[in-house]
Amino acid sequence: MKKNVGNLDKLIRLILAVIIFLFVYNNDNKETTTLQIVLLVIAFIFALTSLLNYCPIYSIFGIDTNKKRQN
Image (cartoon, rainbow, N blue to C red; front, side, top):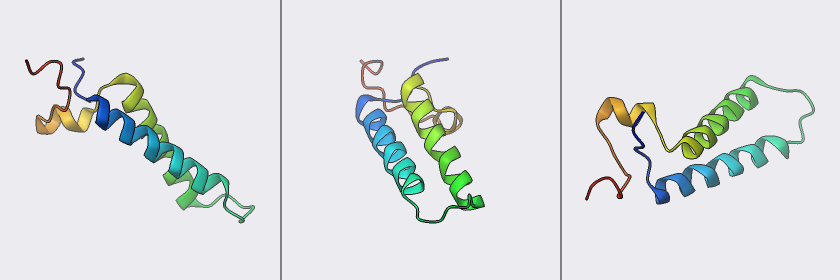
């Protein structure tokens, strides 16, 4: 598994994950909705891909934002 997520991409993914999590957590609705579950899954995927430095979708499309490997 080659690292294909660069530092800026990693930071953006982590920030988005935190924003989505806070949006779901601060919701006034006490019942869990389907939208909240979907958003939490998306936030988890963003956080996981940023921590692993690997995005499977990037691999499919041949995208590589990891600048260290491109030298």
